[in-house]
Length: 324
Ligand code: GAL
Image (tube, rainbow, N blue to C red; front, top):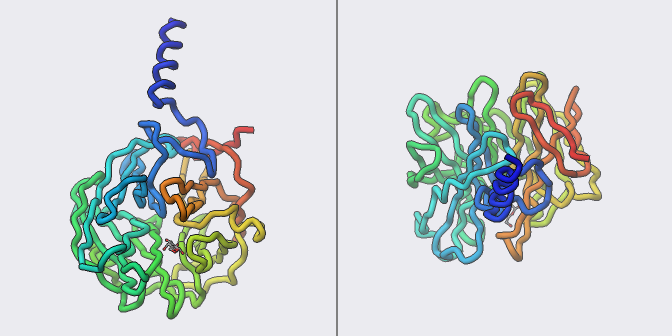
């Protein structure tokens, strides 16, 4: 028995299939094949008991004429199985070399049974400023491009995704002319129905959580790939009014060198954990950009990101613990 367990362990280690027992913020994060996860600027949805993580696939050596969106699945948020690149798209609207597809987010639409992906679609100089939509019948693709548009006729660059506890789907987007918009999606998710809030602040990397009766919105300043001190505000309704924005972490750490992309709420039998999900961009070697995921301290209108260290989460109980 001992020998066989040891052999199994050896095999798993040799094949890179060892289980991740912790989330180590900022470290290389191996998928089921031992490769660093490529899901930058990502978003997560939960379908039954499975989480799906979509993001920008930025592996070395990809064909530069295409843009790729990866998909990973997990039952525990720590171990991720690579399901493939669910988008491999060549310039869908003749935007020219260096066209951009960033921050993909997927919603599942119950009435149409479609998986609807939103992404930032742009030209190399970021002047097109639209959202693109691609759809699939399955969570793990493939997704087919449908159209692009400017939500409610506004410029849209970074996008964020928020699905409320009642299942209503929202899009957050950054509009350089006006600020930070939160909009409700149309019933079939193929467009935008109405604006909930316009926060007149230059914020991107939008993320929202609904926790204990309050909405918490996080955004970063507009400093490109360079990190800055991300900020948050609260409101009792998505329509606002929003409180003033405050730092989510010690400002001199520049959000521990990261930029927000989403918050995930894990509701378990014992507690509820809100995870801050962020990117540590490496613009000169994007394939090596890392992820900073940390449980947030959140209560009574206060939200705080502590100094990152390895931790683990129990999906069933909803509790997390630090490993040392
Ligand atoms: C960041 C944005 C990224 C990417 C980058 C390009 O501000 O969050 O998604 O667009 O700028 O410089």
